Length: 258
Image (tube, rainbow, N blue to C red; front, side, top):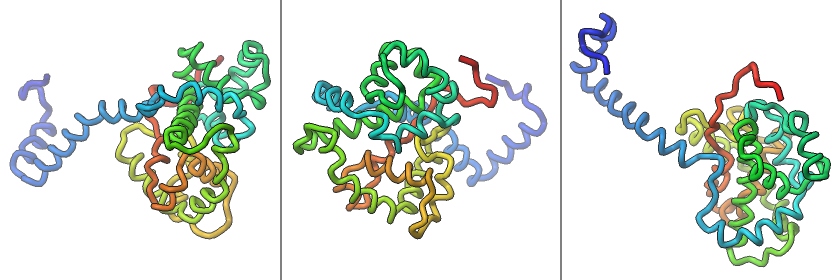
C-alpha cells in the first residue's frame, strides 16, 4: 500500500479534492463497490455456468445434443466459431479442424453438438483458446435442460424447435428493446461480451423495420432458440443473458499460432 509521502503532487491534490467534496466522495464509494463486485460478476458470468437442475436432465440432454448438428444450429455456431473476439485461437474449424475430425471421425459441419461438447470435456486446455464456442455450447445446453425441466414433452430436436418461427418473429419485432437490455447488461459487467452478436449490438439498439442483415439474422435466431416463447411474449429477456460471458483471455491482435 502506498504511503501519503509516496504520492505525487497530482495524487495528493486529487485526494484533497475528494475529501472536501461530498459529490466526489459518493463517486469514490460507487467505484469501490463496483470494483469489489467484479469478482462476483466474473463468477456469475463464467462460460461454464449451467442451471442447478442440469444434472437432473443430463442424460436426456446428451441424447438430444447427439441428434443436433452444427448445421441444425448454424445461426448459433457460425459466429461463435468464427469471431476472433470470441476465440483467441481464431476460427476453430481451421485451427483445430483436422485434429477434431481425426479424433471424432467426422467433418466439422456434420458434427453433433454433443461431439463438440465431448471435445472440450476431453481437452479442457482448449477452452481458453475457444471460449466463445464453448460458451455457445453451454448456452445450448442451458436451453435444452430448461425445456426438459419445464415439463413439456421433449423427445426429439424437432420438439425443441417447434415454436422457433414464432419466437423469431417476436425477437425481430423487439430487436431494439432486446439489444438495449443486453447492452445495459454488458456495460455493467466488466470485460464481458456476447458469444453471438457482440459486435453489432450497439447498432441493433436503434434497429427497426424488416430489412435484416446476415449477422442480425443469426443474432435474432440465437435469441429465439435460447428463449422460451412464454418469456418472450412477456418481454422478459433474461434467458438471452446467457449469451453473455467474461472471457478468461483478453483477445489480442497477435493471436497464438496453432
